Image 1 (cartoon, rainbow, N blue to C red):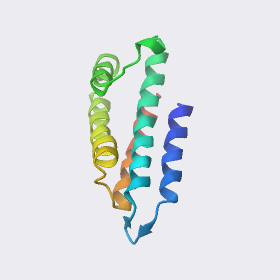
Image 2 (cartoon, rainbow, N blue to C red; image 1 turned 135 degrees about the horizontal axis):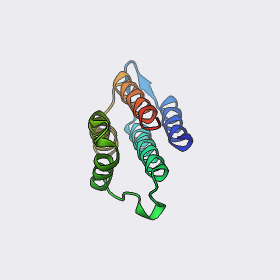
Image 3 (tube, helix red, strand yellow; image 1 turned 180 degrees about the horizontal axis):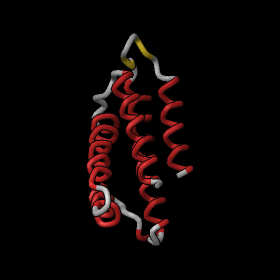
Length: 125
């Protein structure tokens, strides 16, 4: 999970440089970039998990729906919570954080990145 952790670390580094006023980031661009990078850390963790289960690089998922199906097939039977966490992280990081640019509060983004780190830790077991 080295690559996934590296992506997550990069997301935190991006946020360190983002301008803030009090509890809020004032520039949405670095926040969106950090959320996108953190979401990629989740996908990297899932990819590594699937590769360790025997899938080839060519067989890795190519859409969020395909990732959901892969999680359900390879993990969901054993841990439905990981499937739910992935969906939440998709909504928070990819949709709200990156795609829509709706996240601004420092504490909220920190909590989501902590949840991403926990997800990576759980999937790497």
